[in-house]
Length: 327
Image (cartoon, rainbow, N blue to C red; front, side, top):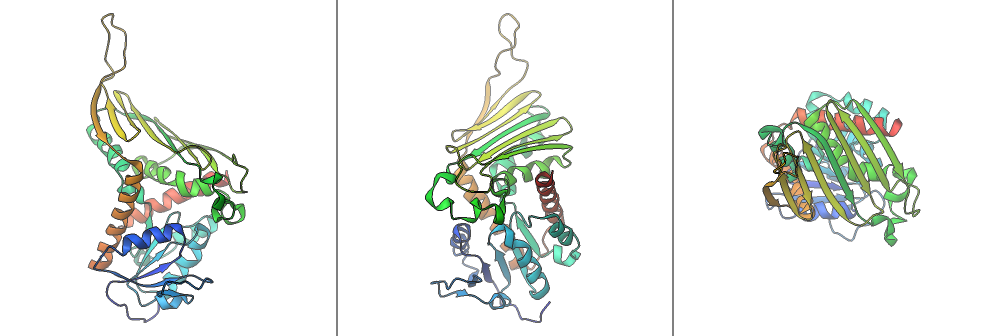
């Protein structure tokens, strides 16, 4: 690492796309921090904080890697070798097996200063899973079905974006949408015994996959994740247990149980609703992103080491993601 002196509560940014712009707008609301520089390798940004020199960021306390997925590996190791501060990197950390092998080798000290933004770990969906695992109102969870879709692939700007280009990111929908839910499954249920993946290009508006059907199996649990850029907007989750089920749909979370609910003749009937809560997926994404950023910045401010378990689980999720692509 270099001997560059860090300046208190200064943030450097790598990237200036749609997601980077969203993160920058969130960061600008943290009054204790200031965005010092925004790096892009080629573009001359109209923002006065813009720079084409990566080393202009090295005096900051932390750097956010918000560039396209295929660039993460290069920036991670450039910063680990030349920068003393904390690193926030969007998920997935890397996209190839050889890159993952190198990431696994980094020192413990470096692991403690890098954070991979699997922000659904800070979401209401995560809280629902943890609550049901703890309280067991619906019994043992044996099936989770997830649908997350919208129509991005039919928008004009999609054709010329990195998300539609197989050379830049062939498995775009898997890496940007399905990965959130895959990570939650790995995070809470650990080992995945079997998996099947069926990607497709439905819109015909690019060369990268715009639709993904993913099946996961872990002990008694089966999980289906359907994600697409070529469908109407749908966000639904059903969690089925041995004694009830949870449905998140149309802005509401509803819990139904118990299993042993009968009619007058002793036949099973649909169990009654026992709990309801309002939940907005769009708001949850924003909230979880803000919480994730806040979590990271608190560690930067207090100069605390980041959680090694979080790093290891990020590696596990990424490794599964890569194996799904390979196989």
